[in-house]
Image (tube, rainbow, N blue to C red; front, side):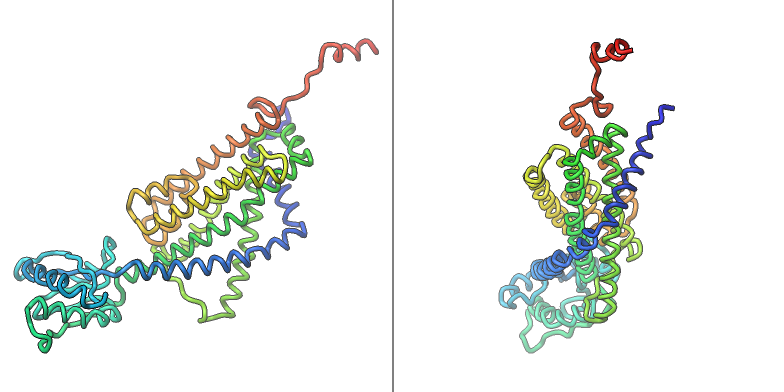
Length: 411
């Protein structure tokens, strides 16, 4: 009735204005060349992380035998582990069987609770290894030595180890999913940090040109912040789309030279969709903080000073999510999923390792709520610190009594 736009309509107007202005600028095309260096850094970080993971995470050998045989094999392992120069696998007791009790080694390998690469069943005199072909072939000799030691035999009478190969093992699958989770986390972090700074620079520029004050006087400040945030998100998605097309073209040219990432637990189509949504959430969360920072800064130097702590805290958040990725189901993973700024990274890694979908619905709702709260807080901070007004918007200048009487006198 008053002619003033609603918050949603005003936010759409601001978003359309900013999106069109930035997309058609020449600087945006130059900006598209920016990710070359972060992509190189991400590839190097992924390679180093994979090497560290391979050296620190050892596959385990599950054992399921009768109680006396388990005790004998553990004693043999303790006696020979120091002399086998690391060739002896780590033993994990899956079950102490009763006489004539059957045990399903394939079901044990399908479980996700342990890093089990193979399962040892049978007895020390007739051991059987079940697991992936390359893993059981690698452990065939050490297991034979352990079985001989458990029976007290001489080296000339090592027992033969029966091999039962499977297509894959839990350890191999988990390592592959960890690699996918780590690569997706690193890519999400680099894209977010690279693109979120546009929100800050755009707000400071319009503050210097007094454009933001004109907008604040015409529409709600919340609408200004939401419009700018979603305009920058749209620009970022356009940039990511261009880079994805360029990366796909490079992948077609490279062919088999590029390494294949293992399939995530939820499957590639759903995982890619999750990546887009979690990128949007991570961008909106960090962008809302940058909006609040930009509302308090008046110069580029102040922007750099105020944004540095935010950047360092984002690094800490990324390291928290990276550590939580290696501790599925722990309190650390739950904490990383609850903290708003680490939640997109932790939940994307969870999608690579756990096929359950309902936690992602809760995470999306929680992150969206945090975005709304942070944007409203930043808008209120801008009104109070910059516009020097109350919660309803920019303060209109008041006319004094003499000024209001002047037109009547002149008349």
